[in-house]
Length: 146
Image (cartoon, rainbow, N blue to C red):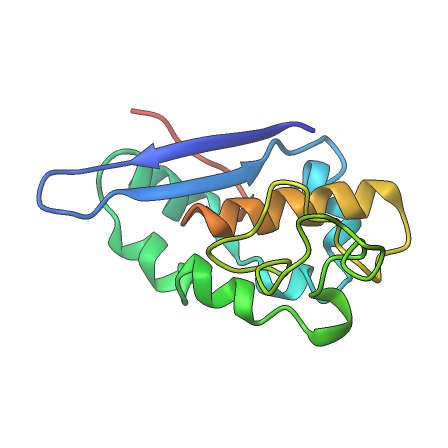
């Protein structure tokens, strides 16, 4: 799965941990395309390329306006039929209250309610990113480099 992980920092600002899919020629959603029309996709903000570029160069405000809620809050917004691990009721040895998107999500999380293996993998990557305090964004539009 092609995604990029960033830690963006600037003097006097808090560090922002970001995960973004590598865009494909047909979609800025890249490896997360299978989530775009699902309840998971509604929780992933689409960021303007210019705002993202500004953040990479140390100017955060345009990106912060779009990010909205913190990653942990996004994890809690996943609707019920898509939350609790699909393996939870199958006598999983790790089954417990943390087997849903949140701060203590186990690495073995298997997202329920999604049609394809591609979507399940994408949702697991997103959930684990949120668990580590990482914002997940899709960058749309032209970016710049100084």
